[in-house]
Figure 1: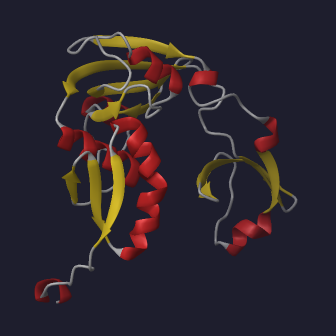
Figure 2 (figure 1 turned 30 degrees about the vertical axis):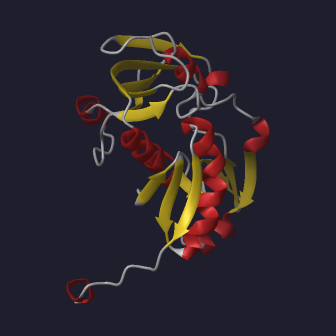
Length: 220
């Protein structure tokens, strides 16, 4: 049985309950069906109980078995949150034009690091919804637990991918992970270290290394 703290590899597809629309998947055939990006599509590795998935999905994993398929309905409160009317704001259209953006009703775009939706545009003002596009929606996840992961290196690498979006070289010494990073990355490693320790039970330190010099081939 899967328990909190276990590392597992899963494949899943997330759908909006009302219309069965696929909004997220790790499965190629489902991604093709939904017209989603197929780049870097692969099963997902996570540590159960550490909110690496929406809360309701994460909670459903405990007590399940490897090799079996499941389905779970997740209410908005444990998925992408309830809609917050205060996150619908009026913005002067000229601010969009300054960024060479012509806001059109229904358009989704990145604004202040968030994905937002344009609700209307009239009289020099644009109404923008800063809520998550899935806020207020009940969703369904269909998933299969492919395997449990016990290898320390695979756990560390999967957590790097989730937290850093890249992999750093590292040394593992007496339950301490020393990530080999350039000086400017050191503060980021320190900032994330508590999360690593919480999930893996290992301390994390930055080991500063000199930047790699570009080879003659790369320079050309």
